Length: 366
Image (cartoon, rainbow, N blue to C red; front, top):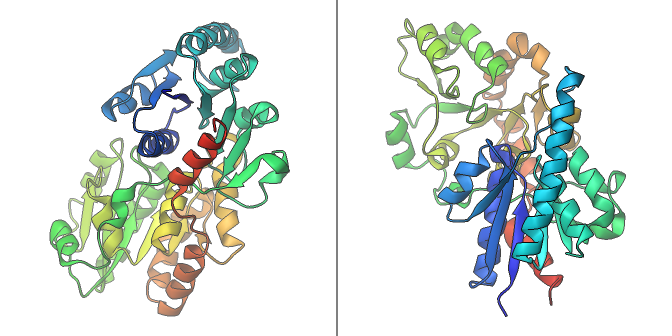
């Protein structure tokens, strides 16, 4: 008998990649399984999921507007439409299990699945649970999490610590490879700082690097790979116009993040769940600058979960322009501190997360 699964959620790469990883893990264990994604119309998943080889249905759902309450009339109408559409999708597809990874579309999809008697599994990526998953938790059969202490938000007997699925290609390159230095045209004798703010970029991190370009130029034994994101590359290149040092790579997107990680002695990053999971598995010392523009300030909570275990350095977004680069240049010269951070963050790594989540899903249909 062919098994069927619905996977719902998205909105950001941090939701979409784990969802696709779970789908791939299910296909690995059940090659003839049918998997259907349900996403939000106009969001990233409507392109990324088909590119990964899976069909997707879109719902006209969006998040609540906390600044303009009048706009929420349309949001509520769209939510009602989405619930109706989700019920139709569930009835037609007849999934054995519905999986929610967070994001707008997962709420109507999993609520409809529960109402129609379909077992549901939630994947919560952050250390501070999102509103959608908290609302769906009571009816869920399993809740797969990436952090300890999630019984603050969910029924304890439903929680399984699995970690977050991450990009497997990141582990295909060994540390400090000649290929990586050649790719970025960097010097193997110098220490490397990797600066990332996500594929779209991070304004404060970029402004902090721009303000400290002269300090980078004076640090003769340091080199930097700076991923600005597509919205900030023009300004970054203008700021670097007079920067003559060879040890600075400025790009809107790092196409070979596996190579970048392989030579990074220190990483500067936002504190999204997927990024943190990658850093844990790679054992990379990191300075985290949580984005203040996310629901329930969950990136700060993600970062604090590491800081409390001496596994990362946290600098608040509001303090970054004054403190970030100075702290990075100081830390990268402290081999003992780098080693301690690396060892401690590696202890928090959860291996084979997608396979473990898939196994929990399959337990519900045996």
